[in-house]
Image (cartoon, one colour):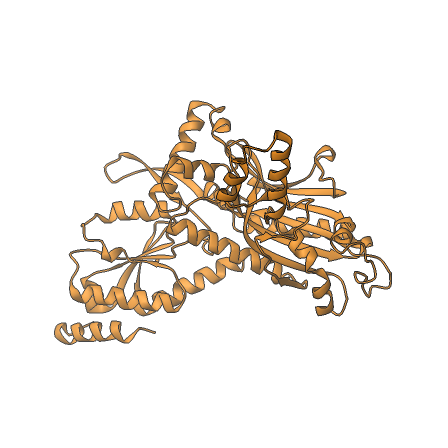
Length: 453
């Protein structure tokens, strides 16, 4: 279905002419050989050049460490797509999962776990330190008191879910199992860089009966690994393994990690813990009666937590999707094609719109009308036709491949005469001729089919 704008322009022209788509630290990076270093730096530069992350050495270091950085337009959209798919995966899993939202800062947050980082006004801190009449011991006491009065910032979402367990329990008529999910930014303690950094986290806190907690941990570990592999170009790069006994969280009995095999080594993307009931009891001051459920036993539910780092996950999918393909051009010259083969559901830009020759008012109007159709169908499009500097299609195709654009649609004079456009595929580089009225449905069906595989 074409917009009135497109139909109007095509019909007007037809009447005249009788008319007929990590935590990779710098230290770790530099322990590799020169080839690995160059490859890693080249890949990072590509992400900067193609609008995934913002330029700047500090920003690139945050991205390398698997921390939340300043994303460019494509990186921000990729992260949104990733979070949306994560939410769909847990909420449509056949289990009862409810979304919640907790405060990033809290005066009442438990000291154990989430209270390691606190926020205070720098002026108050300075005034405290300026008390020259105080002894060293008194000054320490004043600083401690100031910090105790200051709100703590969250380092994960576990505590918020534990606090919301009781009201949520009434929502499900006191029946197990069910889960509480949340996504957002959390602070991570300094890893030697000098200050805390933010991480885009996902959290599923699953409440179940004590006798089924081990099975649920295995269930969610399988589901999470399956989800990561669904969107991967090379699924075998994603794997799972039990957390070694010496690394098990002190509040947990067992853990599982979802791991990605980066070129520089393995990094965890998600960690699952079987946490028992101790933290839930402590959060609700040991009052067992209000925590008990209708499962035939008077026991406190056990907790299985699933915590993911989506900034590192974003880096994993970018790394996994990157390909360098060597090919010969028409003059037998060896060329290297760089392409981000991101999954159709995740890729930030589904289609780029371009004009093959000198743009005219009519061709621009057709592009604008088609762009409007894509927007209405929630298909993200790149308005390449707005570029003022003429660029050869071969160079545009190389740019779009590096951006991960699924399809390139080229409008030309032939479109004005016959309604036909040229559609190039990112994954096959095959160019097809298609009627302009079919483009939107073709791309929608393609993405939907990829999502259902």
